[in-house]
Length: 491
Image (tube, rainbow, N blue to C red; front, side):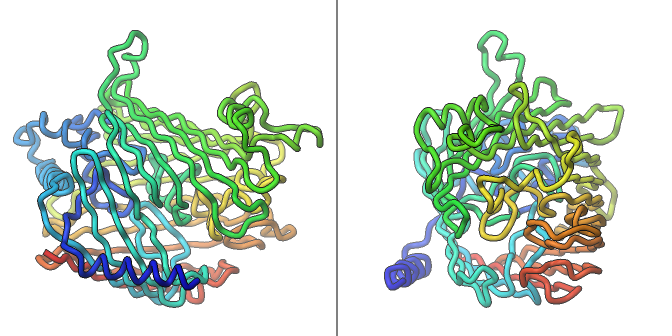
């Protein structure tokens, strides 16, 4: 504990008093919903060819595409084009000086988390500095929390040290990820749980391959990571392994193939043979006790598709996640369906969406207590008390509508409404393992957010009303949650 306090103090001193460096990063993280709305508008209009549904999202492919796009021929996209180009050029400059501090205050800990969610706690103060050169990148982010829900007042979320190796960027640190086209949730990997420490390797440019057959995939991207789940668990020291491949064979189609797994840990096999079996899926879903001794891990496989035909006026997307393997393919699947559309008028430009999540297994006779639960890894597909996938956790059916974008004065705004069932099988049945409500219930939730940029930084206000006090673990004391935050840029 004494050593940890010393390290924390050293980092605070470094962040505040060391020579200032640029707030530069090679990618876009999961905390800016307005920026994502701009990117989706540009992609839907054909300005972007790179796959955009794996986050963090590399700036290099975005800016390469936009440099070839003539925004003068698309007057309705000029605001989005200007914002994305300005932020991208600033992020990739290694000469800009600056650092930032952020103060966040809220009436409750955040229960629901969606793309763009940042503040998790009742009160927090964060200091941040980052830098980028030809071959290296880093972000140091230290957060002190008041009345921390998980009992840890100090977090280093989104901190990393990275390097560039050819067309790949590797890093060591704690980085939030979002795998999928959904706005309110991703069934396989989202920002719901805090990021775990680990290693990640991601393709930088998404250029099309010229190899035979492979070139028909179009622009493509890939990412893989290994993280350590270092919280209190049924199996201590378990790892989270993930890999994803995304491609755009046509401008109107984006397809992503994804895989995650809990692997290893105390008393579990961790050798090369076990890892090979994990990657290939050939030893999953054992039936005998002898076989389960060496079962490689708790595996999820997913495919998500985003289709944007010109005649539809919007995008249809679907994500299917299989919890087990059958015939070398994912089985026992859960689904997400959605539709999103670009809106342009004199008051608002951005994205509107409707989305339905079903985290029970719709393709199996036993629908419940499967997707994020496991008989060996009994903590489940969870980290520090939150599910690594959908914010609703297991066996939930939730429909959401929302809008994300900018007003004509440049203010960023969001509005989201969700209604559904949490842990549906236990509403009238016995309690089951769940990170929100072991005894399920119905709910409706309405949320809104507003933010404005200033010369000195940014101010944000947000509010949420949830009609049911569902949470059983101390994150939701009131129906209303109101929060404000202020980000100050040292320049």
